[in-house]
Image (tube, rainbow, N blue to C red):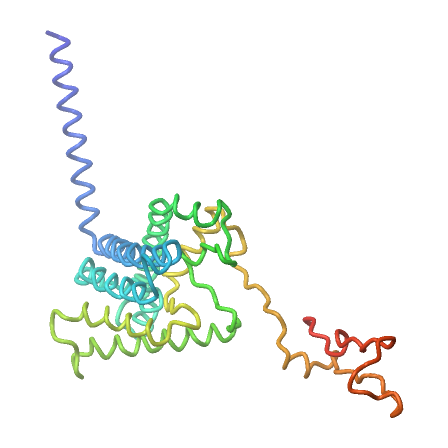
Length: 301
């Protein structure tokens, strides 16, 4: 009897403790900033899972499973779904640049900035972990078990954006700055109630279409990240997962012919002059044609 009574008291105490913990968790989740943190986490996670998944299909499956258009559509409608997930709770920024602008314009207090950005970064990082886990065998098969940033079997581009060969760092910076500005300008236009906003209930769809249009028209140069929360956390993940520190570097590109010609240390040298008597359209067999390999040095400087 004593043992039975002890068990009943133990069960009763356990239920009381469990109920107390649940009540505390519920009270915590009811706090505004906690709800906004979770909203940014979930909306960014949803957007990034769809977007990175589409890139994985394009890179790993080739034209059979994906294309650049499919990536644009996935990110665009990923933003749409993300806004439905968190729009009425946090505004579904999903973008640290948007959060910064919102605070800078006084539309949101600065004390919420780190909460929003932390939620976005964690959501983006976990999306990268998810895509890596889902496509792990495909990544290993495609890359030959060698995780690289550049080359024909590079897979780091699934997770973060990298400049193509025709771009350099400062041009990529200006490109991203312009595209981000265009994004913010259009977002203000879509949501400005004093101007000509999107119809009530269609804002998420219109913003998603905006992302598709930006990607289709301005995405070639730098990958149109427009968003530190989209690019930095997955890049950190690839660094941890085995791609190494090369994910933070930019390979030097070969020096162009035009740049070599104008460089002070590299000049076009003249060929030795020959006498008129020996000049001939065809060089004799006992006099080899002068080599041109040293005429125009093309090394990097």
